[in-house]
Length: 529
Image (cartoon, rainbow, N blue to C red; front, side):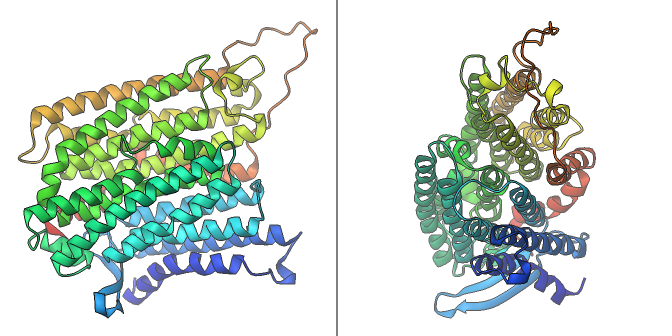
């Protein structure tokens, strides 16, 4: 593909949602209102996110797959000369899958919201915030300037705060405040580290800093800067023990908010570790890697045990909260892969990022649909005598929930398997200088975490899809259970791509690993030369 066309496509990915967000706040032209202004603005959201998805697919199709380590579609324009801050955009094999995933999940979320109007204030503000969130997330994966990365990183916080606070449920105000306070405090610490790297490295250009591989930074500078950046990114990752905002945010968020929070926002933290910490502060990364791995493994076990506690009978566990805690465990595998400092582990982390976005996005869609039908996400109510029993009452919905659960527990042949396996392979043989006995211990605990994951996911499937109380043969005297609506056409349209990609990534992992591996090799060796 022509370089200019690539540049325009990448710029469009960032700018179009921003322009669409502004347009959503304007009155709809009379001829485009359809059944009313609310329908018009929801259709506007579907249209804009659909165009952005088409641009992302076109960019991926035109990407030079023979050279995925090379930064492509670059735009480099001076923005603030006095501070040497530039509008620098580019894409390589690390960022391209995340750009496509973000565009896909946002489009599916807009499509879902069109048919399931979110309960809350005017849809006009909802669509504007959704598009602003998409623009900030895409920019985070596309920018190549440290200050622009920070601005894009911060840009997503406000729209997510309002999506939780205004369109959420339950203790939404408390959850929204915890989300914004945790992430803002982490971002302030991260900014100090980014400034230190930029000032001491002589530039904020991420490609140049990665190529220098920390040569201009003393070991002490690397340690201080990397610690600040890791703390800020770990909040978003989310790494134990900085994860406590996540379950509340997911439980209170609307379905679309949960899908995007789990599917793409969490990936910004782990992406920053791979793009910034590993190549720019390699000495500090080597120093902190064993501690990062230890926190990751604690997160895997902690998240799984929390899910088991929520899944047991009588615990009154919330299904959305359970899936949120499962994200702590799954992202622990991502952090463990990164902490091995090996191509195998980092590739596994990037693969697990994409797999988690697809699978957990699907699960949150399904739980949202289940709540719409039954009015609750309480596991004891869903599994009780008057509960869901999806296999009998809504078999297609039950089948999709079972599929999402077995994909999440890492069944071979589905996307969730490869990332976790490669992360543990990386821990089996970590980078030179790292303690192999320690990493073998981490690997063993991570492997135990996969067993715990299988346990709680199968318990959820049994309770929700079958019910705690088997249905006895009807005698004709008891009232008939009310029917649950099965999967609607628009839901099938929104969920089918996630199911198909989960299967495709599981059966053909080379399609994704072929993109990430050369880029990871370059980053670990000193950037994009």
